[in-house]
Amino acid sequence: MIPQPPAAGADGILGLRDPSARKAREMASPTRTIEIADLVICSDERLASDFGLEGRIGLVAESRRNDARVVYLAPGRSVWIPRPAMRRATAAEAERSPLGLASELFRRLGGKEIEVETVATGGLRLVIGHGAVTPDLLDAIRAHLGARLIGWRLRPAGLSKIQSLIELSGPPA
Image 1 (spheres, helix red, strand yellow):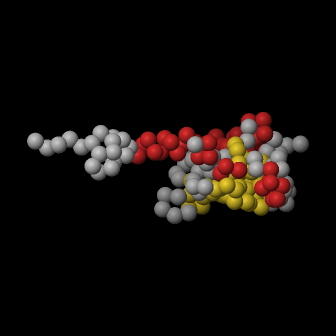
Image 2 (cartoon, one colour; image 1 turned 90 degrees about the vertical axis):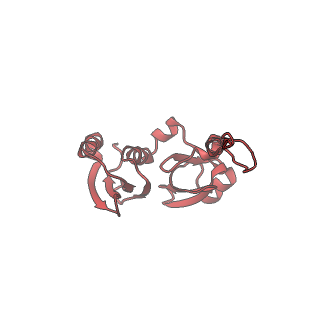
C-alpha cells in the first residue's frame, strides 16, 4: 500500500508547510496592505520632517518587500519609505489630492506600473503600464474624465503590454 502524503500544513518528515497559510499571514500584516497606486502618508514624524513630507499625500509607484517608492507632487520627487513608516490615506485625505485620480485610473485600467509627474499647466502626466483594454473601457474612462483629459496615447510596451500616456488638466477651480 502507498502511504498518503502529509496533510497540508503538517511538519512531517518532509517538513512541508502550507504555503497559503504563510501568504495569509503576510497579507494580514499591516505593512503588507500597501500596494502600487495606493495613496499614502508618511506616518514617521522624523522621516516626514527630514524629507518635507508632513501631511502630504503620495502615490506608491513601486513596491518592494520592506519599502516602497512614493511619488509626491508638492516637492516634485519620489522617496523610498519603509513600509512601517507609512499608512494609507483616509478617504477624506485622498479627496483633496490630485493623485486620487491617478490611483483611480490605474485601478480601472488594471495597471501594473505607474509614473506620475506634474506639468507646467498644473495638471498631471501619467504613464500607466497595463494589459489589454477594451474600447468600451477606454470610452467610459474618457467620458468620466471629460474636460480634464488633455491627451491620451496608447503605445506598445512589449508582448501583451500596453502603456497609456495620459495628460490631465489641473483640478477645476
